[in-house]
Length: 273
Ligand code: KMH
Ligand code: ZN
Image 1 (tube, rainbow, N blue to C red):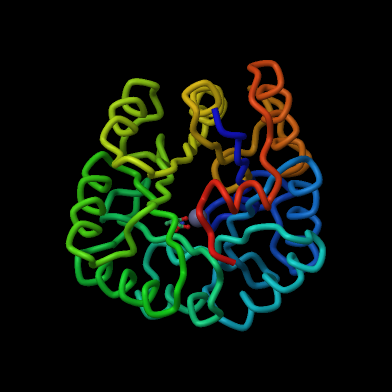
Image 2: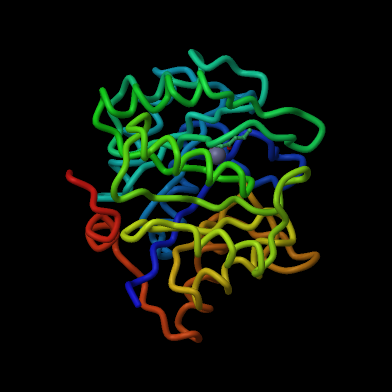
């Protein structure tokens, strides 16, 4: 099995300090949380940005400052800025981080219920995002919240509408209204992947730790972080993203998977830079 790539989604757009006081908003807090995750073993940081008061934003200049500051604090780390942002944002707003030419960015693969909201990723939006990623030489991480999202993006790749081989898919399972975080659903989707594709699993809420275990033993990669889950275990909130990553490292060791550093992760993900 390849080494395990750990992604830390340190911030998200939905979780707040009311849920866990360690959720980062300011640039300094973002750096603190990224550093804690990186030093614990995360090779990849998935980045959303906020205003200092916690309001989610896709502002290009806020992204520039946060990405540059994390790069400085975490040498070599792979950054995946979000083009999902928060529900209700326009495609133009969401695309702003792609103007900074990151080596990777998320590309969300279909419209879905998202708790009480609707996360809109219709076909014109997805085609525009695919075109931008190809123009700006950005490798997408395809976010699939639903089985149909995977089918959609695989068809788009066949038609050359989004970057193709090798694809990196993140199965985000357990969002309210989307595919649940079960080993059965994950296994079904992994079996649909084309040869050469890489994958990560993200379990949301109580699905987080079972999906980490599944990702480790199934030979995929895993994502943890406050965006998805704020608990180390039932009733025990994590003090930092680093604590969540440390738990992944412990589980991986127990189960016999080594951890990929950023250079090894770049090779596994076929990143050019
Ligand atoms: N905040 C969600 C509505 C992404 O980063 O691309 C979308 C999201 C996906 O978090
Ligand atoms: Zn995200």
